[in-house]
Length: 197
Image (cartoon, rainbow, N blue to C red; front, side, top):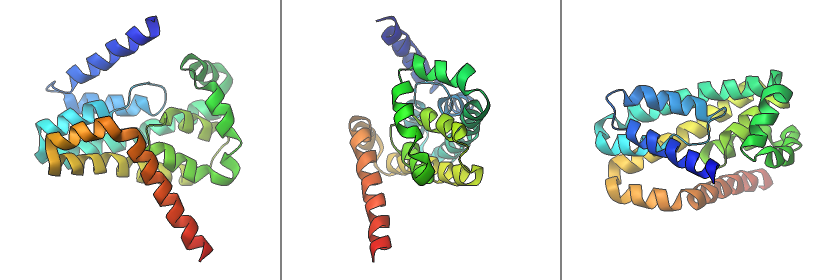
C-alpha cells in the first residue's frame, strides 16, 4: 500500500514537471535516472511536452534519448562494479531480482537483442542496463543497441504525436505495452527470416 502511494506521488510530480519552464531539464533528469534506478518511464513527461509544443518534438525526443543513453551507462557501472552492494538490493526493492536472474544467462548469445528489446518496450530498462554491466556486455554493442532502441522509441512517439496529436496520445497510453511487443516480435521475425533465406 505504501509503495503504491509513493509511486502515485512520484508519477503526479513528474506530470506536473512537464508544464514547468525548466521541463526540458527535468525530462533530461528523469530520462537519465530511469535508465539506471528510477521506476517511472520518461514517456509520461515526453508525451505532454510534445503535445504542448509540437514544433519542438524532435528536440524533446533528442534530449530524452541522449539522457536515457547516458543514464544507461550509470546502470552498466552499477552492475559492473557494485552489483552486490547497490544493484542487488535495488533490484530486490523493485521486485525485479527474480526477472534479472532469469535474463542473466541469456546475455551470452542475445545481449544486443536484449538491450534493444528492453529499450523499445515498457520492460524496465534499468534491469537490462544493470545486467549488461554484471555480465560485462561489450560496451560498443551496449551503446549501439541503447542508442538505436531508445532513439527509435522516443522519436517514434514524437513523430506520432506531432502528426496525430491528442488522438495518438490516448491510443499510445492505452496500448503502449502490446504495441512495443508486437513491433519487437515483427523486427526479430524479420531478422530470423533474413537469416534463414
